[in-house]
Length: 121
Image (cartoon, rainbow, N blue to C red):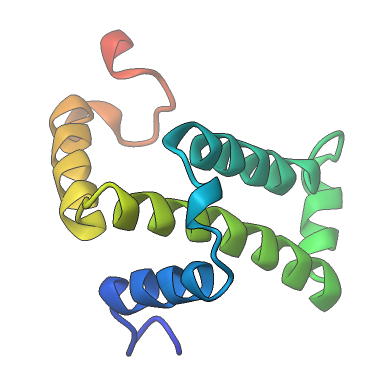
């Protein structure tokens, strides 16, 4: 699998197969999936906590660290895909819709090079 040849649907099916083979669906209430997503996102953050920009650059130069961060990102993606699959949501369509909303909130001519919330632009 790689990004250029794998569809979101294939990823969702792979996650669902993994879960179903282990009979884990019983543990996947919306609340528990949301908790899992939040925990995994926090584990990504742990890699960067209390580190300067230079320390983060050095961290990302290390293959083992990059792999560890990548695995945490995969855990986040796993929960996102699982939630979309379980809730019968189309991840690609949701992202497209949200990007359109963000584009209207952050028009290029106002937002380019700025990190302010859209209400402050």
